[in-house]
Image 1 (cartoon, helix red, strand yellow):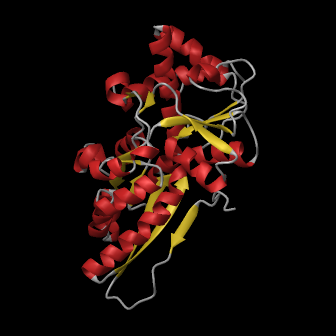
Image 2 (tube, rainbow, N blue to C red; image 1 turned 60 degrees about the vertical axis):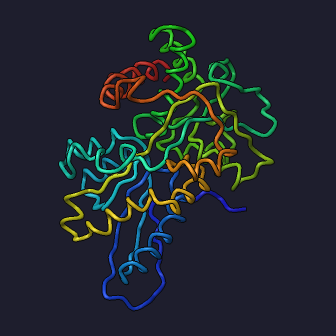
Image 3 (cartoon, one colour; image 1 turned 180 degrees about the vertical axis):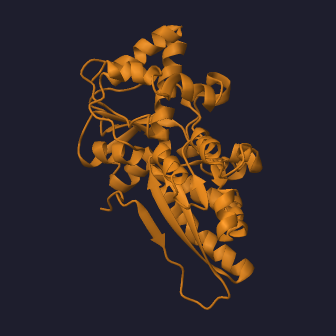
Length: 332
């Protein structure tokens, strides 16, 4: 049985063949995308070789989305970033000036080639009868979720829970009290979504994992549908992981053409098919239709419509001294 990869950097090797040029790219990505880019990268390498005759070697760096953004700001020479939320790429633009503030307008779907949502992974048979967000706040339920200060997935988790709390109980104060009850049930906060999955699936911690839909689908496929099952809550959030070329680094390294083609490739039918097979909801309507059985329809909160965008949400909920700090400080 194949276990989840715990390494941080994966070099994907291309076939040894004569070529006029060999280009190296680094994709700094967030935790759960190892398997996705393991499949995407060779497909792009083949396409680029056929189109240009040149070889490409794509290296991957993985970690919590916020930590990855800070690594790029601190000097990690990534040609592209494929992170868990737009705020982290905004942070690279704002703090390091490595790409323009309007980066999100450069590709379709606000530079989000596919999306996901937040679901629950429980042990087979759902012994704790977890059906919806209210169940995560019940006394005695151990909830596994990563740290919103370092993990983009965790911020989507938090906002999905908050949205449910406000919709169900009617006010921000009630939503805060509800989310505080959930975090009172969290025994440990890992720095990233994959670490949280390992805690739940490999180490046996907790009764329920709050996670990306694609991560839950991967766990059932790789670790056994006889061990886990997915619970889709009554409402969740549209979790959109964006992508961007890091302009100053690709211009310095002479890799702009390949880097831009790499991200554009993610929108092609072939790459959309790979994304769907890896549990991400594709933007391509035809591909989505072919995989409808894997992606249940449900109402989804949206970061712009329901939370005023990432700048506002980050300041209110996740900045130092924000609502998350206020909630979690009381649980220490």
